[in-house]
Structures are given as structure tokens and as C-alpha cells.
Image (spheres, helix red, strand yellow):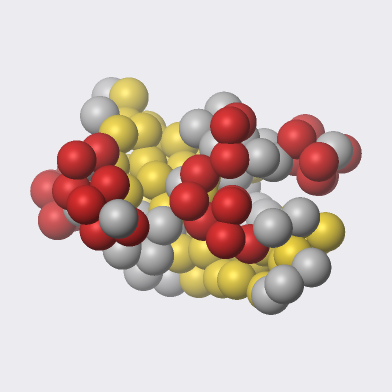
Length: 120
């Protein structure tokens, strides 16, 4: 179940754990990514908390958690090759996985059609 936030994060829930990343649109708007700060595994976050930072040649952007829960894994491989973070690979370039405390929080997020309409 893929859902999007108004701040351009996505979460793809599989069971009670979701992979989280930023949308192709957000990556396109940021331009070339020059620095990424990821959260630490084991951190408990609330929906809407700033959990990561992307810096590009254009701007720095906070990345917010789309759900409350515990960060269980961080995609360290992103840090090795920032050039791989492209709009075409946005859904492969997850930032972290989160064990979602309340899946009901995701009901407030947008599906593909609603997100596409928002960015149109």
C-alpha cells in the first residue's frame, strides 16, 4: 500500500512495516543531492517529526515521518552513492523502514491519484 504525504514523502506498507522515501517530484524539485542525513535505527518517532535531511545544490529539505513508530532499518547504501537518488529511482531509494504503531494514521495520506492531482 503506497501512500504520499503533502510534504512529498512516500510510505509503502508491507504488514506493519513501511519503507519511507521521497517522491520523484520532490527529487526533481531538489535537483542534484549533495548530502543526506538519515535517522538512527531504534529511534521512536511521531507522525510529522523531522527525521532526515536532504541537501541539494538548490536547498536543504527536512524529511518528515509519514507515520508514528520505531525506525527499524536505515538505507546506508544511499550514503555511498548520492548520484543514484534520481526521480526514476525514487521508489527504490527508500530512506528508512518504520514499524508503524497505528496503521490508521496512513488513512489520512494520499494514494497515487490524489498525489498526482496535488502536484499537477
